[in-house]
Length: 247
Image (cartoon, rainbow, N blue to C red; front, side):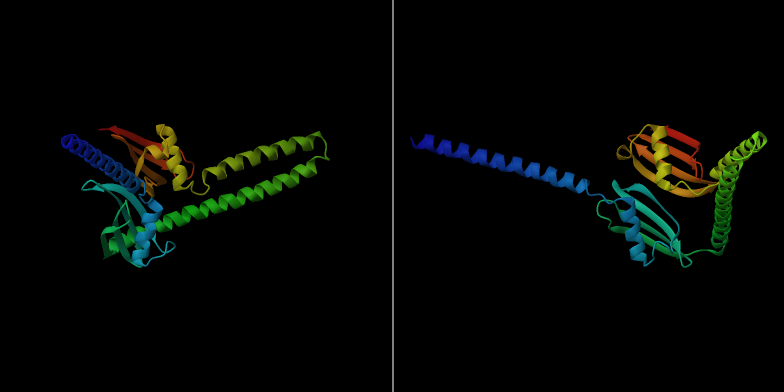
């Protein structure tokens, strides 16, 4: 009778231990999943780097980021320039911790190159603003002419059609030299072409650059073992080049 009671107690103890182990494993998986789901986004990584450098976003120039893996750990590589210095940061994606950082003075050659690029972009922006202003002026003149010609003869109606055609042509021209579409729109265009959703890929590059005299967005991302690279016109959103590399 004593032996049976002892065996029953042992069985109960083993069951309790097993239950505790199962709960511990479930808890570990839950914590791991929660930790994995709390990766910071690119905006947070950039903000942390700027804050550490004491630089506000308005003063940062040539700012861009990339995602990479350092010893199996996902990190953000953030680079920007401010006050004649070049900043490079490596932040852990899971919690935003700064793993490495570098601050160095911009060389004279690079400073001249940056000044040239800045002047080119400023000139392009000026051209775009003038085109937009001309479009508004053309639209106003066309509207005024259209109201006036409604009371005229058939010949005046023909002149109105000519003015309308001119307006249409002016609109197309100004659209081609408007403002930038934005990096988010460029990402969307690349994802749509690749047939992917934002949640199914990991972006490794998304920045504004100049290639063969054109201002383009360079977009790169990975999905599984496939890497996608796109060059997208910064004004029209047209895909200029793309490359799909499967490992």
